Length: 453
Image (cartoon, rainbow, N blue to C red; front, side, top):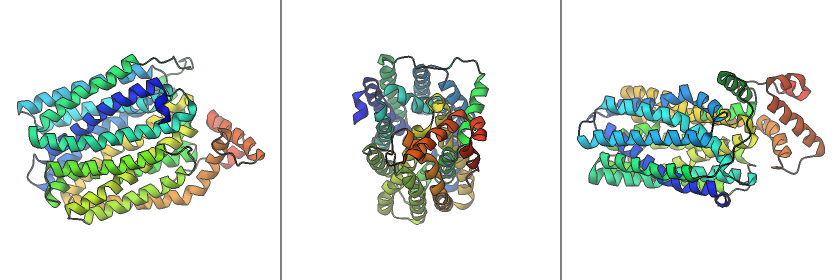
């Protein structure tokens, strides 16, 4: 809880906690609404994939640009604008649902709206954390606490959403979510932030974007972290969108049962986030990143073969645990090794690796589920995640070799010889300088980027 010593972070923590509970409540209600619009399981799964695609495809196109702008503009104002637009979207959904006239095309259109908002909000919020935390040593804890916050909302929101849907209908969930945004908007308004040091905006935003792209994808550790996240997002994460159809048609569950399953995943994810928040260092996280997709993929395969609701309720926390260990660990390692002036762009690529790739996964999963069923689609995704974990594990020794000097230069590891500390400085200079320094440094020429399979 050390990051809560910072006033701005404390305000954000409370406001975002309330808002995220409403967000997960709306997400649960919306997916259940779509899943129950059609009597046929395969048709319902298809439209769930389409809605998931429409809510996330803007991230594929806009997130990198948003990250570049977050390195140039005032991040607090960007967050205020994004949260306000998300609030309007919730109220529109509530109006349509309560009027009884809501149709699938309206849901798809409003999901696109929210996707545009999230494409700006997520990378800006990720890079804004460092401005809210007063002590640099609290950054790792703040990142993990953010993940804890998301999953606390993921725990309370779906359970509340399932109950509210059963008692009052989905419109009530959308309405409550709209009001929940007021908490985080108020927190952002009363923050006192100091202007951060920024380079004069002499470069075009597209030049900034290209610079960040080269910086991220020519350094193997950053590239490997982004690729393993993208693979799991493409193959494994779409199970969220298929879950309503799977629950209703294969587990014989209702809205309360679906909410309970999503909340159970939140229990596991919250446990993983709290474990990461309790750590005092980023050491050992690469090993977790190798284990997490294997755990997640294996459990997803078992889950797809299961037809018992009680067993599904046992498996969901473990699925949430594997997913959270991967996402939060990748986030922490990236934030630890990245340069401050490129943080917004790298975090936009991180957001892109799960928000931008996920719509493609949702669309493919929806099409595959219409042909083969949701269970078979989940099984294939689980196998792909396990194969990705094996490929990442094979690259682990080289990634450790490249990251260790950076950790040494930042004092994260202390048992490094003096010669290695010099190498750490050279390595850090090579990364900070982009491609030019890599070509002039002897160590950089040996570490020329090779894309991780």
